[in-house]
Image (tube, rainbow, N blue to C red):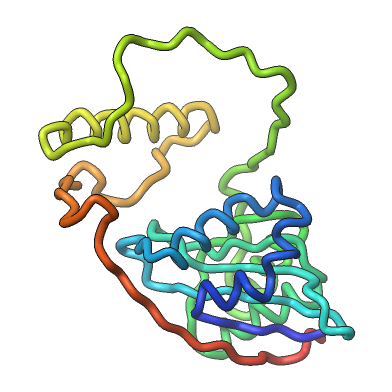
Length: 215
């Protein structure tokens, strides 16, 4: 087994798209975020941007991970992969001097990355929160409020920001956390008009390299 790391979201989707599609519920966050970045969306404040593919001895995709979070501590997002590759991912980041202070994703792979990182740095692992996926049975559509959907405008900035902050506080209360999840300093966010209906014309490039074997 070995790891491949890339900074190119399109290359990652080309290589791991079938693997992501095979379990769309578990991979929904990674697939959605990566597709948005590949389409030109940028997450402001994200200091790291990479994707990792774990391959088995036949070359088939055996697991995936990414690091694109724009909020502290800028956690890696690790989905199911062999324990050896999860540990190798932690070692690879450590060897290239990339600090890792948080890991999200699926167990046990996320825990293996965290524990190996702690071992390498002399730290300790603490669980911040547990997340679960719930399956929706029969959808009962609630009554629709008056009005219609429309894009937010600059004049809506205060209202939109209040909604964003209220959501963060409500989500934290539901999860049993004292702190609201979101970008630090959110109270100072400003809403700027997009120069075009389709948004800024961002472009990006990246490289792919074959990483060390998972041992």
